[in-house]
Amino acid sequence: MDITDHQRLLIIDFGSQVTQLIARRLRELNVFCEIHPFQKVTDAFLDDFAPQAVILSGGPASVIDAESPRPPEKVFSLGVPVLGICYGQQVMMHMLGGQVLRGDGTAEFGRAYIASQADLSLLEGWFLTEREQVWMSHGDHVAKLAPGFEVYATSPGAPFAVTADTDRHFYAVQFHPEVHHTPMGSKLYENFVRLAGFTGDWTMDAYREQAVEAIRAQVGEAKVICALSGGVDSSVAAALIHEAIGDQLTCVFVDHGLLRQNEAEEVVTMFRDHMNLQVIHAQEQDRFLNELDGVSDPETKRKIIGRLFIDVFQHYADEIEGAAYLAQGTLYPDVIESVSFSGGPSVTIKSHHNVGGLPEKMGLKLVEPLRELFKDEVRALGTELGLPPSFIGRHPFPGPGLAIRCPGEITREKLEILRKADAVYIDQIRRHGLYDEIWQAFVAILPVRTVGVMGDGRTYDFACALRAVTSVDGMTADYYPFSHDFLGETATRIINEVPGINRVTYDITSKPPGTIEWE
Ligand code: XMP
Image (tube, rainbow, N blue to C red):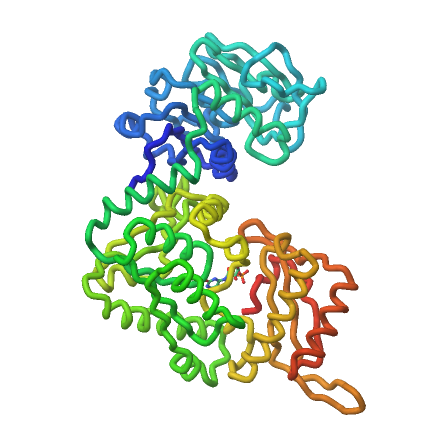
């Protein structure tokens, strides 16, 4: 489903590690763009996509190798501005009649400084001082410019750091403006899209209107079901679909007994009572907890929960007559096709099924109204749709819930202790104004009892671990540097307020080598 009717910018991906960041920078400028691997960009694709500007990304290949990737020649005859970055610059020079060479000690990796040679609208507002920091990562370098191009900035290792053919609006830079270490990088993109005539029509307000129309057009009179997890993605997807088709949507919220304190009530009350969605609250705590009884292996726990989730969801969904679609909160990073140069199929498509295998099994088609959005855009859309900020900014919570924060056997008693301790910990974090600085924070209850002394008596209770990490995507993470005062106060509160815990530790493992969750 293509739900955008905006000015469009095409990013042709040659496999750089940071191509997604180009899209991020452009979306921040309210410009709609899509990343497509070079293998897929044919003349017909270009006609169909009709970009208003094209960016050629960086990549690991060398244009000197005959087999290295190229964009179609047609990119240069579309009559639209083209920006080449790193490999993109080199491929432009190579194809337009310049020369790229390897060696001569001109490789640059990391921080470099460029100096202006002449004024260029692409660099407007750039050179506040004589030199400007950029991030380089290149082995090859441009040795001869293509006809029509001039040099506008140089660095010690890149005499052609910024080049342009201003008549044709072709721009080519050796460095990476999309990364954080090129402080003025966003300004370069801002100048580029202004030159290309983008008006900044990609806003969440405009997106919401179009998405609503597109959902109506896709599903018609059919019914849609959605597994509401209480997470941001499925919540925003449900709210958007509800706006489009009202009571044709039914959400199923599966309570597996592994949720946090008050979580089920909060989610169900908000969606059912405040937002008027049809929500089935599947109370399946006993089923899940009975099957998990005596299981301590983490993978077995996950498998049991996954299997039961599908069974339970299917059972409730079967009761909704005429259901033809399943809604999923799939995001853009999950659908970007990644470039691979060797071995296997040339293009790997990462697809994301939140309710694994269900659509096929139940013969359902998918509605994925967030497929074109990044996470922060989903949050902005959620705000547009009236979801409360406290909900939009929630930390991620894993599908298997507290099961993977309770190493060893899961018992109702341990879950109850864990819920209470977690509530105190999160309350502490909120009281100290730290919630939004932290990617994820939770308590894990450890499978060990320790001896303590409270009042004049001996205790023999559970130990718990506090976890709080900073991260951008959950792939890597570092522990949050709480003050000792905060940790001391929190430990005291947990021990005083949560019967069953007499020892509190703080987990300071980063990821890697640890994982964020305990299992
Ligand atoms: P780890 O523990 O692998 O977690 O460092 C990275 C992120 O993924 C979440 N997570 C899960 N989410 N099902 C989920 O839906 C799972 O089985 C699962 N395991 C981990 C975790 O909370 C963190 O945000």
